[in-house]
Structure formats: structure tokens, C-alpha cells
Picture 1 (cartoon, rainbow, N blue to C red):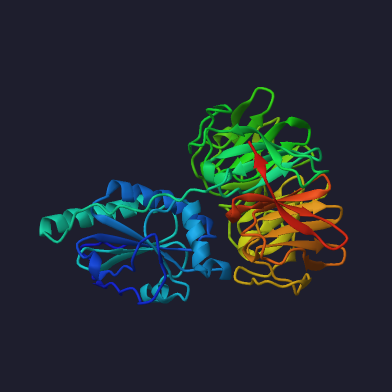
Picture 2 (picture 1 turned 90 degrees about the horizontal axis):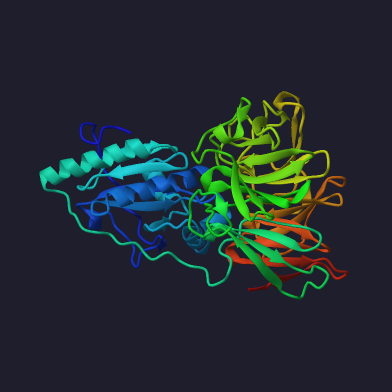
Length: 495
């Protein structure tokens, strides 16, 4: 970022008229914000880097409550993200308190010359654009720049103080709030990441009588965001996502505690939660073998066992890493750390925000969300001997809503994948569909039509039926196969 006082600057472009605004009763103009320091955050809600900077923005808003106004400029990558109602749900999911404008046609983006997500634009109290920066990890430099502007314009008499209260956080009317992932046993034992409530739910359900409700068997976590081990009632999580029962010990379940950059273990015998990987600090890519508890992880989004190895989809650095729970060592399996779609050996392949994992007994399949792709990974003894190949998907900006052959089919930011009896079931999240991929026939077929689901984040099998984390609908949905085609219905939960 340039020096906000000494470098030449220009008048900040005004917001175009007619754009949809959220988190504010009326459209905002920069002219009405004279006297305030204004920070624009260009973001799109699929982007893991944009998620990572939200705590930085909250920190700045808390530190400068009377002098700084943050405005989110949502410039969508995916079609689904351009819909105002979907942005509104993302605002609620991530607890955003500042105003957001839907820049769906990239008008504000182009006015300011933004070129990547996230990008920040800093505007002084006199309406001048005084600096821009891109990428995450900018808390310190933004803090320094805002502080410099506040001090300068307070002395100059051009600073206007006064609180800018944000809207109340939106709550879910149901027991679940933005459930992200789940896992289930054939007998109907279910664990759900109640992500919006920063906790896990334990359910019991008889899949042979699917019309009946699931019973709430327990809650893991206090519901207060944080990183704390302990009993089921005192442990704390932050936006947990992927869950997996230990295939070798069903009394254990592993959790991708995404917001804490950690892996946790739930022990149903002792009714405790223990951290087994991660320090709680965000790191970057992993290339060398490292002690699991000493490693700084980066938004682990899903996990799965294959043999005795726990594989982790690390969305932040675009990698898949492995962990031997017995040795507590993390190691690279695939991904250079560069966001792209490039096949080959694991040490040379590029991934793009892997967010869902499945296994067929010898290979892994993963939903590579930012390239809207489904890919296969054959793990080796190390990253160099592992192999990655793409089944469906073409590039970072190639997406759509189309069935057909693997070459013809298009997905839109899938987050979940399940292997069952030779078929890959995909939670095609931004198309609001469940799709079936047949690796033998190399075809993709829609099982649902996109009207009953709202950004589904996961799918798992439970007995003869399938359970879907219907994320934005705040419910679990059952997909029941039948001679007339699959049937969808919500799964009630009784307390």
C-alpha cells in the first residue's frame, strides 16, 4: 500500500446508482461518508482468501469504531454468487456487520482497477483514494494506514467521529445453522457440523424408516467460537466443517475445525474433545514432514481415512496432506500451493481449494471447488509418487450447469463428494444439485433439479438412503432412491 499522506492520490469514484445494498437500510454514497476513513473490501463469498481477511476487518472495525467505515464490495466469481439473496445468506453465515454492495456487473471493480480477490481500497475523510492492496495477511499494513489517516485528519479538522452501528447478527430459526458437513454409519449414527453455531450435533436415526425424525443424542461444543479442548459441554470450535468416524475405532470421530486451522478428535467414551493437529494459527503450504501439533494449518475443510492414513483437504493452501494418527506426523500428498488445475505427480500437481473427500478403497476423489472440478488422487509413498488426474472440470473460470460426458459436463463450485458402489455422488453446491458421476461410463447425471436444495455442502450414505447437508436451508435433507426416481424430503430432528 502506498503512503496515504505523501503519495499522489485521486478522487475516489462514487458508487454507481441502482446497485443492490445489504446490511444497510439505504444505499450508501461516498459523499455522505465525508469525514470518515473508508475501507473498501472487494470480495466474493466462495474465496477462501476472502474468508481469511474477515477477522482482520472485524479487528479494524473494533479498533476504529468511530472513525472507520468498512464497505464490502461483492464482485462475484460464480453465477450463484451474483444473486443478492445468496450474498445475504453469506453475510449471515460469516457474521459480517458492515454494509455490502452487490457489484455483480463489476462496475465498482473496474472503477477502482481491482484485479484479484480480496483487494482493498482506502479512502481518506476528504474522499480521496489514498492506497490499494491485494491479498490476505494485510492486517498490520491496513492498521498502520488507517491510524495515520485518523491522526492526520483529526489534527487537520477534517475527521468526523461518531459510531456506525451495524445490524444485529441474523439467527437461524432452526436447531441447525448453516450445517457444513456430516458423517453417518450404516446403523444411523450421525454427526453433523453445525457450523454456524460452532458446534457438532450427534443424531440417531433409523434409516430403514426414513419418514421418522432423527433424535438429538448429544451436542459437542459450547457453541461459543474458540479453540478449547475439554468436555463436550466446554469444548469450543470455530466454523467446523469435515467430519469422519474413525474406520478403525467407531468411538472416535475426527473434525476439520476450519476456522481454528486445526484437527480435533471427539472421543465418545470419555466425552471429550482433543486437538491432534494445528496450533490454532493460520499457516501456509506444507512441504516437509512436520509434527502435527507444531504445524500451522490453513483452513482444513474435509478429511477421510484410507487405510491408517488420515487425508486432509487443506482448502487454504490448495493441498491435500496426510497424517498418521499414531505417529502424529503431517506430510504433503498433493499440491504445489499454487491455485490451478494441473495434473501429474503430487509434488507437481496444482489444486484449487479442495473441499470434499471420498475414497473407493485404493484412490481418493476430491471436489476441487474453485475449478468446479472432480479429481482423483492415487496416493503414493510420498508426494512425488502420488498421482492426480482430473475427471470433470477445466479451469478456474470454467463452470456451468450441464450433464453429459466428462468432457461436456460443467459443475459450479462443488463442496462434497461420496463414493458408493462405483458411483461418485457430488454436492454441486452452487448449482443446488446432487449429481452422479460414473467413472466407468464417464458420464454425469443430475439426480435433483436445483429447487429443493440451497447450496448443499455434503452428502453421505446412511443405510439405504443418503443424507445431505442442505447448508443454506439450515436442515438435513434425505435423498431416498426409488423406482420412480430419487425422492427428497427434510429430516426433522427431535430434541
